[in-house]
Image 1 (tube, rainbow, N blue to C red):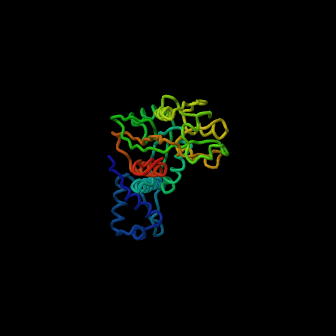
Image 2 (image 1 turned 90 degrees about the horizontal axis):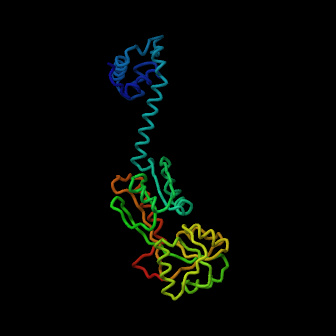
Length: 306
């Protein structure tokens, strides 16, 4: 039965092939000549055939050894790559990150954050899967993704979450009369075509309550699942909408203007991950960076909001 080969034996073999002598190989490897001789002897015994012939004062590989050369080179190259990858993982420069998110994020804020995040992490592979909140929750419970970006999350024993409330604004087509307002209230929108999120969402319920409290009713024109969809309708002059400032900011200079909306209606975002799946350092770093990217749009309880 052959003994296990060691990387050091293979390195010694290649060094002797390249330098033609045990002495020069030992100098290249920065070990003693007897140590090289021992490694070659052990490798010869393990393989069961001679590795070198002596010709004109040089050691040259036998025919059998030459046959092995390509595999030995590939093996050592692979070990080098494994070592480099290991170092990159330790330094959080390599790994895999699977993100489930709301569809709007996949084409707006997320690419911007990932571009910065991956700039110093070229070895990180990212998978992004957009879907509705219900599906994102299923994936988190099933531990199919590392991170989820969702809204309307009401808690689950198998999911850990961090929540942030994002300010909302009223968006309208560029040049619209609403631009004269410094703050827009429900009464200012009563006679306008309103584009809003789906009726079963918490955000819609809060918006509807704000209109009722102001003695007005929603003039529904289009119901859209995503804020980004509402933006596309508004920029084409089809109505106005109340959405997250985070989404509105992506349309600055693209045919949309916006103003603060009062009363304050938070768009509650949750960053979620499977509670029983040990998070990678890459995932934790991403969560920290993504949460930081939201702070400029967050409602801060210690600050005066409109």
